Length: 72
Image 1: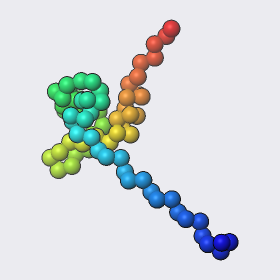
Image 2: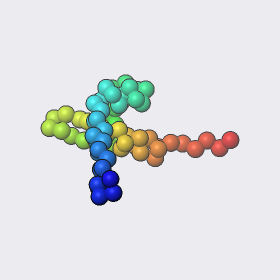
Image 3: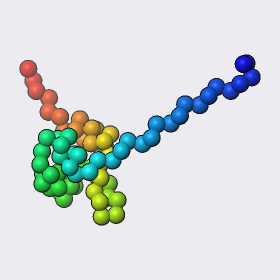
């Protein structure tokens, strides 16, 4: 009907945070390497109490900033 307001889209839930195992799997490295990146503050992470978690969009942006351009 003409007087009905347009339905609002349902917001998507936030991306699920990854644990160290998930990031190591994503990067194709060992957990030890990811722990070293965290200790040296070279990778973005979120501390939830004593847990370390990673936001997938932040990890994707971090990967883009560390990408090497190969001149061909």
